[in-house]
Length: 71
Image (cartoon, rainbow, N blue to C red):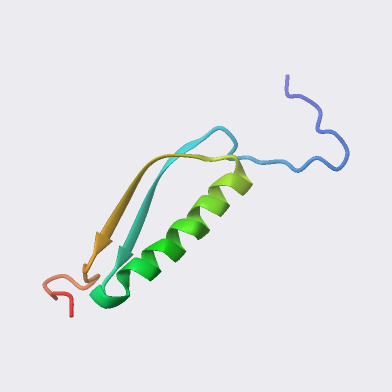
């Protein structure tokens, strides 16, 4: 049987889940700042939702269009 939720307690349906964080940037001279910003936002989201990040990957200079190279 599920535990009763206390008054004012926020429900976190993803609490206890594990995730892999993936960061990408396709403009090489902006990648450091862009990936850092993505990392901060994803880590904040995970913390707020009770999700544990178990691995992180960053892809620099990758185009989202097949066959197209980074600038």
